[in-house]
Length: 107
Picture 1 (tube, helix red, strand yellow):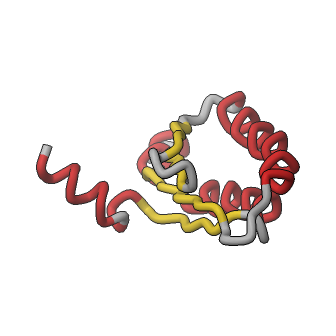
Picture 2 (cartoon, one colour):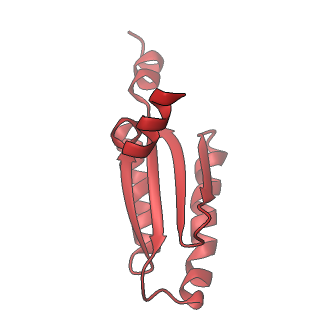
């Protein structure tokens, strides 16, 4: 198997769910927003898929992206450095994200 085929087959969908911490202030969000935008731009500029958006509660958001386990861990580590103490966030592999797995099976 070639290296390219092997790399593509290792890629999976990942879900990053984030929500505001109880003590998050507007200033905190303004401080981290440019760095989060830069992280997403960096990811997409490398030709990698990332789709994100907020939920209607104005406190929670979700990003879906394709990556190998190593790439997803690096992305998460960068996100953690930016958002620690401001947001609560969890990274799931698509298959282990309950809501999306249920939706996927019903559609």
